[in-house]
Length: 498
Image 1 (cartoon, rainbow, N blue to C red):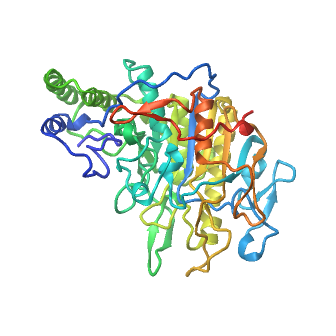
Image 2: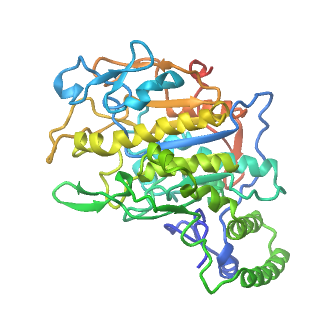
Image 3: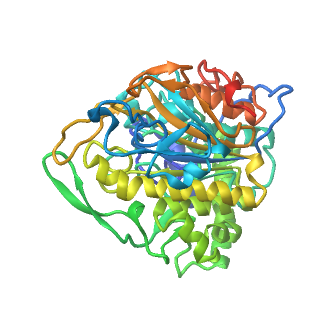
């Protein structure tokens, strides 16, 4: 079966909230190879006289919550149970120190802005909140990407606005918004968590997701609280012949030639023509758009060529890190170069919870051997790579996480850990319109609370829209046509702007 990841009819979890009527079922049956999601209903407000400074976005997302103490905001003078095992090192910014296991980024700190005063009230894995700017979030929402209360992520908002500006434009050979290496929490048992999805704008504005096909080179024992299991985790290392694909289901099976696909598409078009006479609803038009997108991906080569990281010199690939995150970040640069406008790379949990950056257990072992080296290689390499290609000045780079971790270490078995902590944490911004060599805000002496200049995830989103030339107070319609702002409250962070 052909599938474009991003469609609720064709991949991932399906929610009972999506109730299908008789005509919907008829359409789904006829359109299954190319089905899409819900359509957006109305135009957005104009951006006014804002001048865009960013042409594209690279979003690197550290799911699970990276510890502020062991990344961008060490506390060497705090008591041992707070400062932890790692030492700080000097950086390219005089007087500013970061974790010793980020030596490559230490040399590049004069090219980025570090925000040390991120804060919000939701002490959960609030990926959806981080990416959407919704005014409220709770655990049932965060654990269900299809909860009807979700607002769209910024990726989906930008996709929607682009489509509304150019509703009749031909589909580009490389999609507007792409997500790597696979949909967030897609490789975990159970339902999909909230994140970079369409919310009330509909699933047809999700990023186009890739699939990962390859072999992990490291097997790690993941502790699950009482027991554990060995996991071959590609985020810890992959073989050089591993690859990212358009999607495992959006590949023609051997028996389906392009001629045969064309004949199927012709028949599908006839069915669609009949259905349009019966139903001219926006959802039908949205389905047509998604069919075109699916067909475009199946019959053109630029997307596959952009994902083909084997075309890059092995030396460069190794600099990015031979891990799933490193190679996905390299592929993201290639996608941006090929014409994608928004590319999201997630460092996700794989096979079990308490993986990725959710370091309740084995905190220091995992940071030392997996997490920090992988982040250091990928982030430093893409910044230099974009700069050398003349792309950094108009590419907005966001390296974000959803919250921080507790100031005091917890004596979990096995090993120590840090628990969830949203009172203060750190993020990094670079590229288009972002000041170089700046540290914004400060946490207190123990890295527990904001000491100076609190910054919300909503402020990051407002700044993102501002740099794209969009008024953050622009509204988009929900499923019932009611106007909602791109971000609930929030401010443009003038202090991070160049």
